[in-house]
Length: 309
Image (cartoon, rainbow, N blue to C red):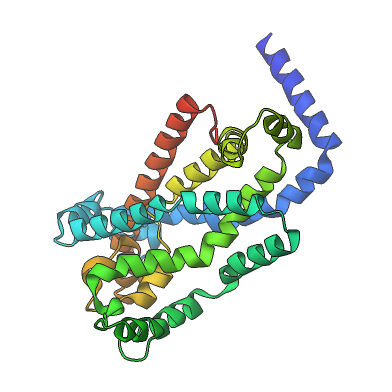
């Protein structure tokens, strides 16, 4: 009986594949890409548990178990790296509602020409290279010639060394990143808002609802599933800050707050050649991300019935 049911399910699945073969063909390049560049390289994760030597290969290198993890956990820089990484990510997470607010504001604009101009102006920075963005930040915040410090001195204040002060690093990093990504992040929310039934707004106006009340009771509930999914995805990469921008902004004077796990992996792995140790640190970072993703997805499913799976 069980084998008969399995054959029926297999036949039904195969029939569905043949009927929708064009969709599966479109999916094939993505599957190939992820298989080659994401799943096959997982074979190399085992070097995190080995004392890897290039001339001995992955298989031939001696197994040391959790030795690299213990070394990392017991090191004097572990807590500083963990604290800086978590605080920087929490800071970014606090600004998660900003794209939602901007999308709701743009959606309320009646002048279509001004709305399109505003959208273009806000998401254009997304296409600027990280290197160029950091260059702009350095130029604007220069203590002597930077326009920001010139304005501060013009108002009677003293120049602030933003890029060499540990206490300013997180603010500069997060807000410059928000400026670059804010407009682009609103696109998904604007697309979700475009699907809101206009009859709901019409009925609400008849009942005397204000614009704020319509936003609160119609727009936000309508895009709530999108908000939850994007929040879960953000949590899934909570520990994974792109190290490029941090590395470009980092110097010996602000390292107290700019040292994070990703830059440490880069320095120990690529610059110092400690491949096994760097792989162990990176694996620790990935495991934390996976745990957070599963936990937040579970909570979202219990609370809002919206989740990734």
